[in-house]
Length: 395
Image (cartoon, rainbow, N blue to C red; front, side, top):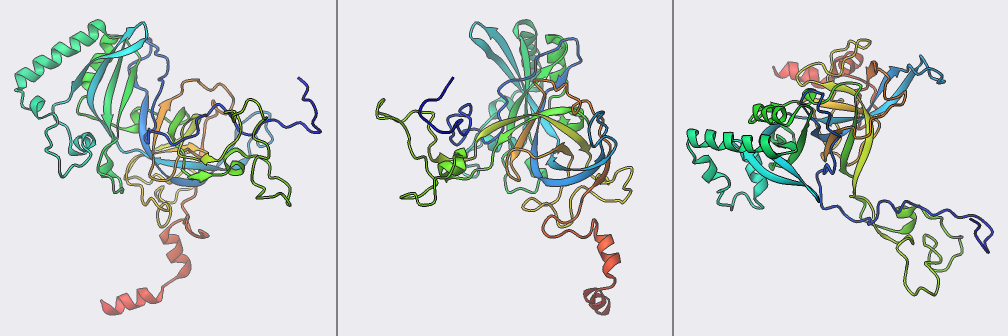
């Protein structure tokens, strides 16, 4: 293909694959497709919701044959996602139809927490709070009979099983009181195995280490950071015009020919930038950390410390629950929910199969220059301070 009547080639700026670039309707990362089911594998969950806390960096040895950094230390940026346990409160059975799958029936747990019920109301304190009261008024015998009937229907007719889970936002240091609710597909085993597996998890907590493990690759689904209304240079990356251009230079000079007498969809225009729904594929898990442990310690750095940096993660705070550490950046801003899903297109490269051994995790302050890793180290370096002396005098 030869471009006519121009001095230089000009490939288009920006991808048209993400149109329309508008604010998403789904603040929570929406799982549009689940991994292909392998019935020979044991039953397992395929996703888990987390909350973005911030970033830090780690030091590790690279084992990558043929690479220039093979058997050398590298410093890599990592993202910390806090992942408090989720609660399974329902089961949904789907049947196959000529136009796709359709939800056939839903089974709910007997006891539902307030943070879940808040999700069903716009204004909790003015609501009558009647959700699920009829169902909860059933006797134990009636509820057991209903549960058995519906689960048997699922085993007979359904082609896929998903569980309804909700997060426990009360365990996080957020202002929000409404839980985030999502469906997670159960993969592995036959339909009967899936239904029994899901029924066994009803009203129980699922921790993140029961879904993901270290060195695994996952897909991160979330909403990008919003930047409001932006011009074409920022939004599409178009080239700035010459300095003496009339009426501004961060513009597109020609937005189309005389005919057709309208602006084509492919022309870069100003508009909404950010707060788009995005899926990042094959993010490597570097650590699955447990709460109430020295989860910032490694085999090479035996300093007793937690993953939270000195002074906390900026605009987030401390991490007191389980967490996941993934390589590189992640979609979204701090405190935003990010849904992690089992990889849909398994990565087969040398990076995906490399075993990760962390040598050092940085816990210095993220709000300044970060000279110290722990408060004990800072106290030992600075020695007794005037405020410590005054405190002793007062006592």
